[in-house]
Image (cartoon, rainbow, N blue to C red; front, side, top):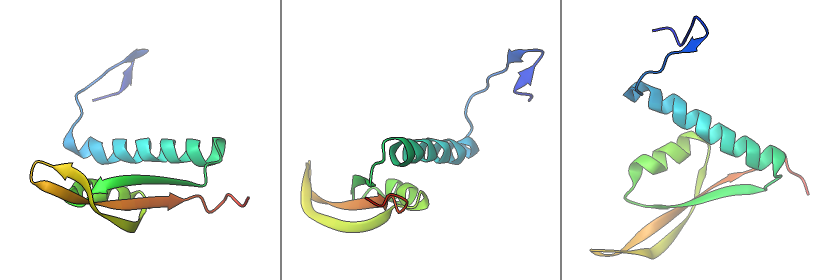
Length: 94
């Protein structure tokens, strides 16, 4: 399907194979804005250890797993550990 045809934009529903490209674009845009415009030294996230999909997503985006916060969040089953992942802005030298 053509995306632009006769000066009209054709839209379609997202397919599962589109999600990787969308996540990559989203992560790149956030990282570039934070590092290049805001001059942020690092980005980080707290991700529950059981959320393997999010851990893989951040890993693919270049984040490093740097810490584990033991029994950090309360769940219906008790408490759960959280991974801290970080992406350091190596270009920023302040």
